[in-house]
Length: 582
Image (tube, rainbow, N blue to C red):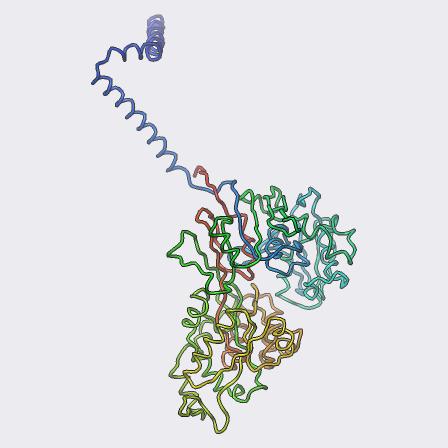
């Protein structure tokens, strides 16, 4: 029996061997003897079998894998201006802020939802029982772009440099009451003199490398070469600077950093190109010099109609509002609550936004904006557009129209002046308000001045009846510097000189609690009182407009505090894709 089995196996083996020999040695010879029809049928059968195998294999692969971002590619963006300070302690222009966000990382950053998350920090900070001390540990094995290790010494050095008045850092005031202490090589403790929930926003500031800057004296801080040739720790490092013969920086090439605290960014290279004017930048986009431009609307003529372009146009809400601030002591009519209420109710914000911003803004009614902690939609609705109600309020308060349609109360005319700078959209805003308020018999005089004169003679001195201006509130909507009575005089920015003891207490209580629901409750009270008192009329919320080529993916930003914050999410943007098994 065994011998028979062995014999059969040998025959089978010879058969397989002969089959292989047949397939590879004799197929072409046999194919020559086929007729034309037989050849067609044979070739068709082979093609069908091959296609079937390909389809089956492809189907299996596609059904068992998913599309994922892949590394690679180059991206370019246009900007207006020229970089001077790629330095988190000095950056003030938008160009400098954008570059600083790409090159430097802080202990924490904001995600695409506006939540604070670790960046260089290993985890969320540990808060002391008295809520005045923050203990923070760095991730291990972090490196600067030049390969040096990142340690607590760098954090301490950064804070002490900010606090030293000789360095004249614009963020000096934010760190006045803070003490930074090294616990160990990777751990820092910040001590605050007061309980301050908004302080955590300070921890997003980029950290400077001590080994680079410690030998730069204060008098050379602004002119050091490292301001344009930075050694950072963020997702990208400066690879190449392209200058014109006159020394003007034309472009900067950035390369993704493989040792970034949150992993290498997908896009390998980013080129930032700098233009002298907005129109030059827009031309650069249309001539394909750059892949994208981003801006908060600055002029109606720049807008691209989405129906007539192949660009993707993203509109991202920004925590910034435009408002008309009142100086109640300067104008008798404005001192009337009924007048201010009628003014608030007679503004059609949708029409205002369409006329001024071509629709690229959002209606706003209070200093707390949608998605911020404590936002209360019901407070917003108190001053919703109602022209009939606005006229009725003025009639009841004794303001009567004359033959020209203008209102008077006795000999007092219903009129005041709006002061604004020569920024085109501010001028258009004032003109639109003048037109809308004419419908309730209110006359507006518009005073347009240069930006320098606006700040010196009106903003700082509070020398106005009405002031058209924009304010940025940030991710944390703490109203202290804008609406607390202690900030009524320069350098405070309570422009309306609003004084309400109840509001003062609400603001103070809100900023000294870390309980989210409690803070939200305080801010709802604030909005309720603000919507009644109307020390200012909030008009609209800004949006950041991104116009970009459609091959750029992964941008999922829901809200921004500042335009540069779009780059917090840069690691997730991608140009290329691959597939991974499920």
